[in-house]
Image 1 (cartoon, rainbow, N blue to C red):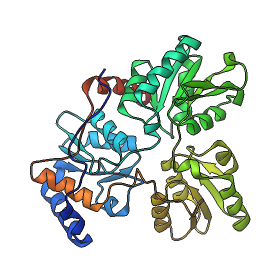
Image 2 (cartoon, rainbow, N blue to C red):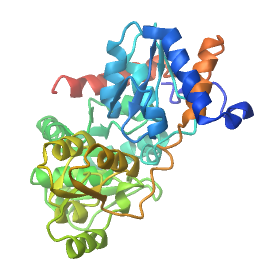
Image 3 (spheres, helix red, strand yellow):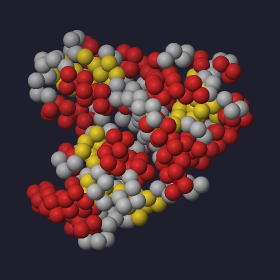
Length: 367
């Protein structure tokens, strides 16, 4: 199996784009969008900057955007304002007539980078030596195409933060144990919610190449990959205590990528979509502290002036890797298409795409 995606393009933006005014760039993007019409589709992830979100044809979570891109069959050019793994998923799900571009090749996900295919295959070899064929792999959609393909090849499936409970329960209907990649916190929170006890969970450390557990190895049901979201892991119990002390009536809602103790101490937890919907349904005048990425929190604050909303951690910065795409890179990508010399094309090799599709489809069949 070809393990790596093919990246066609340039990493360095031409200097001319760095000297244009915001108004000039916005006017150029609008002009190109009008010229390309339905042949262009710009999906924008919730975590992106407002300067690019304003031009998005759809805003949402990564899998949702990949699916919407595929449904826009008239769109030959998918300029994905997100990160590598999202653009890969879009390439997997779209047709041969559609091409996916990532405006800035530096846009990535630290969590996805915490599980590479070589580490995963080594881990799988050792784990199957220990547990035989009793393990089914699951991977969060925040993972590389190669990891999705590995999971698909081994009869597993992808999960989202919205359907993780359903997919983990499905996995246990197939096998005695699961390997959950690459986010240990989503895996631990989900497993605990469905009744898996702490002593029934272990952690696979890909750096030390070892299984870490405290009690009887035969009791292990969930093997959590030692990965995490660099943003969500930085919300702490201290943040919660500070909010409780300063704003006793404030609701606290966090993403399940947060540590278990943070999720347990919060009032609500849920996917990005769930967080948005809960705030939308909340009564006017209510107060909320949100534990998720800062660009999204700021957008929610702006959209709901009738509610008091703060970040659970006021010192949190936007995700540095998810926050790479800016207006200059978006314009550069669009102008390259217009000039017939597109850059930063994302191509997932066919063998990887085929197995990754198996993993995605097993999840979608249970949606």
